[in-house]
Length: 492
Image 1 (cartoon, helix red, strand yellow):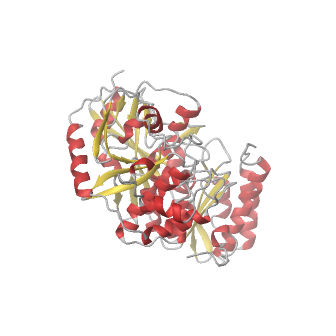
Image 2 (cartoon, one colour; image 1 turned 135 degrees about the vertical axis):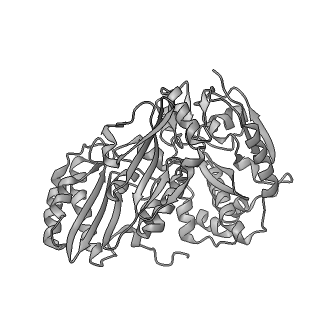
Image 3 (spheres, one colour; image 1 turned 60 degrees about the vertical axis):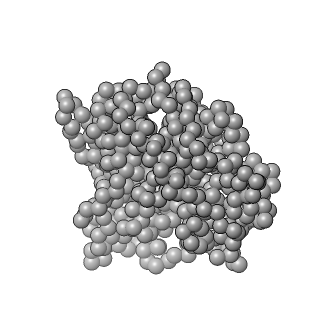
């Protein structure tokens, strides 16, 4: 196996690791190779946050900091980046970082197992907000800690710690020096041929050439799902093709009538772009897994994976998104575009050829008269997988439904459009009678299964209920959902 040497910056020094297998996770390397046992293995599937670390990469003349789950992050994916673990924050004389000191002062730890992960999420929050003189509100703290679970302390003192950090003596990272080291790693990695077991192209042309040469390689675009295959199903891959370094596919391009989101754009950045056009998506976006998963996962990876309970696809279908597939054949680059709902052929199966890459997701912009919402129903409000996801996008004209697009997840082998319900709404007056008839149609349109997340009967009932909720909200009723619920006396 021909493996590339991994190089990253830690504690201000360049760390080099050789002979790392392509499917070895960052958590395994930290604990077993570098003896960094402060980073904990909890769920080993990106749910609990005990393994959280922070990655830094150059973003112009500054560093972009991202808290990620190391348990489902492949070790090779941090090549050329900076890395911090819970053992890297205190100074040599033992002085604690504000993220650590705040946890001590606010009594934010009990058994301590989850504490390193919380501290690293707090460190990421500190770098992205406190260091830029941005206040950490209670809402922000809850949102950015949603990927960290605690079984014994309770979240109030941890949220207190998030807000306490700004009151402690400041700690700054020398970003100019770090940028120089990252630039050195960039030069060290140039000119490499894609003949390694872990292939990480830097350009779209190189990606398409690598895909044509290695159609059997396992593609990853954030690895938040493939990481589970490795950890839980014990799958191994001789070759891995990582799309996340392709500069063209890390862009979000703005056009008059749509935005084009590259397949390597993180879920965090992709949802930010969608929210800029449709602010009502904020609550849904913050419930898509936890922040560490959104920081690693990509919109292209979520779409290409095609899980029937993946949350982005119902939304994108309702918005009328198209996907662009690209390939290199006989030395020529070709592409084809199709509506997202036409991508899937069965459970985790799609129309892509072995040499094709999902390159772009094109999402139409909001238009006058548009009424859109997306609803996620799950057992746990934060950091959980949907039992049902329903996305609706209606265009109203003179009190009638001129056009209806509805995407649904959790009710079939793939994410689907509710075509019969769309037809039942289109051309009808937007009133309670129309909605009640459409609820009956929607409940009868699918035959979902019963599983650990919900029974088939529950899913069918909830589908209609969510359509009724959509109608009520369109009439101005806003106090019918959990998002609008706040505890009296809750700190700001």
